[in-house]
Amino acid sequence: MAFSKVKIWGTMKTAILLGATGLTGGILLQKLLKNPAYEKVKLFSRSPVAVRDGKIEEHLIDMFRLDEYTELFEADEVFCCIGTTKSKTPDTDTYRKIDFGIPVAAAKLCKENGINTFLVISALGADANSSTFYNKIKGKMEEAVLSQNIKNTYIFQPSLIAGDREEKRFFENLAKNAFEILNFMMLGPLKKYRSIHPETIAKAMIIVAKQGHKKNSIESDEIKEIASSL
Image 1 (cartoon, rainbow, N blue to C red):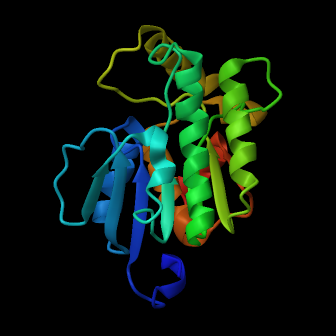
Image 2: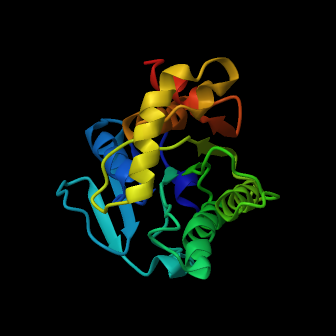
């Protein structure tokens, strides 16, 4: 019987987090650990996190073989913060395995194990028919995730994420600096293109996991509105 079906109403939750070693995932992990609604946070990753906490249950695995860990993949909610960049992963096949393969495998495990809440970070401009490789992969990932028909599926589509990463990304940093300058000029329909902080994304994901949202896809300006609602 699926884990989510045997939980007793009112008990604390278990979350699965994919991508805890990344920028947004790391912040989300800290928020989940501090949130009294969660009694356990299961991490699936290829490398360990530096955080030590009694709530953490860490599984170091080959993320490209996530589908082999069905029995471990049990929780109330799944947060997927997996993603890479062309500069970090120039090989297109590996890029596809990360940005498409891992989130879709996670969604399929949710469906198989009766996990009714799946939250995943995509990108603003994701489009399965796009001529841009990055946007196309994200768009195809979104389509594949939605095709699983998980009851509570939420796709977060942030604009450029502002924040310091351990690895240096020269051109991405240039873009971030430019966006910081241009942000105040982006008004009306352009507001969604303003850069967004990972703290904002993480906060919004937890709020949506608890309260739900009227739409499956949540664009960058809406993410900010949700995060500022509490």
